[in-house]
Image (cartoon, rainbow, N blue to C red; front, side, top):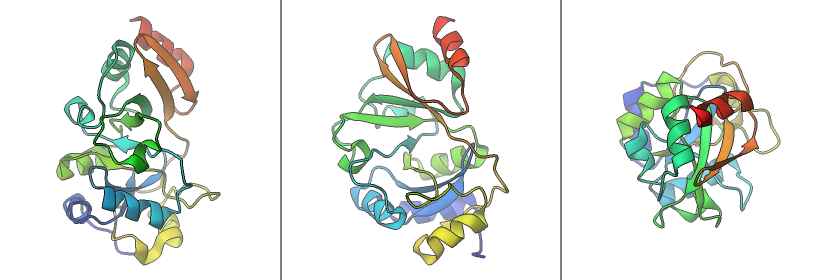
Length: 200
């Protein structure tokens, strides 16, 4: 079992370009500084991310979302106001300076303000968005404990933040274009909740 560190120490590791493991709403995530192409490349190498697959990012608030998203369409603004922080990832137009590995050439970026307080505090401590796919190699189950994540990544990850055993599942992913919202992947937020948030 690898020793775990504080949020401040994990943020320092991220700031140095390293990769860290930390809890999100459903499973552990493996993260890197989303503003650094080199850090994102290190994340891809550590996790074994499939080529051409976009990587979602976490932001601490709407101001930080706008550092990676070129626009916040009306439907996205409604969903964000009602369902963030939470397990809802919005696919938005990406700013041109976002590393290509995050967008996979789509011109869009998946972003959310996480509902887990440790995840949100970590991103806030870094002060920049964190690229954060689930903590598992392709084809393996996402880690629900630090110990599971450590069996996957060992010393290739600079720091582990322990949030206990997590409940599993995934964020719901919604692509937004103007007033239109399309569910790409159903997860912890159901379609009825999304529909209500859009109609309020």
